[in-house]
Image (cartoon, rainbow, N blue to C red; front, side, top):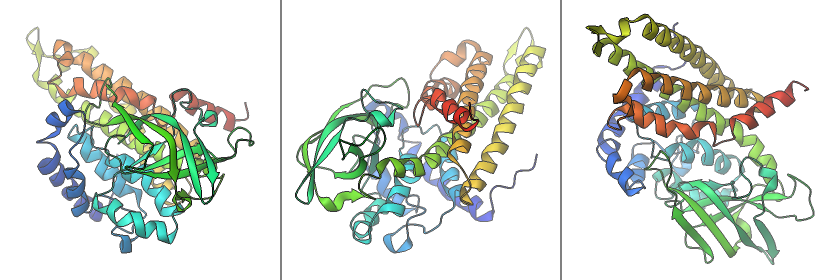
Length: 381
């Protein structure tokens, strides 16, 4: 079916993004995977090319455009290249809305120019060792001391955890409040006394992405580093999580499309018993099923992006998109690896790398089970 999500402007931006990835990322990504972290220099180059802070106001160096299609294009090009370690999505899709919507003019002046130039890398610290998808179970606390906050606690599985200079930390600021109430967002900056990074976590996939534990021991956070309203942190999270989950869905569909396309070509050229494996009925049926489901997912995703741009994309819409597309991504890549036979198990084949990189998709940003719970509650059951 005809797809009309993108305009000529988005196509031109895709050329820019693809050229950037080919020049500054693809030649180095294997080395970054060995190192377990991306070179900070690529962030500065991304800033120079206008790839950071699309929605941030132009006066602070951003694009000044609230159009998630640009975010999607950049994500698609990174996935096309297998560049799973570059944390631009976390920076642009997850962190940026918090700064854009919640920061004061003084905070924007202080942080956003370098946020957009790539000199300041962001992260968001929600997950804790004993509180994964359950944000109501957060134990990290921040207690008032004059105008400042004294922050104590621990976070884990934090993307951009090693490279980050600005960390949006979710902390309990009203110990008397029940459940989700009484949480706030505090910006912890690099080198604040008492802020320490743990090990760069050794993950199954996405090896170049720095994912770390963070520790806060009596960190004195200035009062003017409170982001948004005091004790309104959970509300801010709920307002911004749909875009985060939409971003994950974009990656899921792009990955499924890319792996399926390469597998179709593989099935045309790889032979068994004297003929291409794609000519066997079982292979054709598997590919037909995958192609149909990926096409359906693409159209739901495109509609979701347009609904998000229009301000109509709900938490339930996001939950549906996130769980369905990521579970489909797992299915597609697993089936495509099977069609590759033994070669699919070799890491030099893109399908193998996609297999290990994609496994986290149904976990982070809210597990499939939590997404189904959100959808189920919306049905009144």
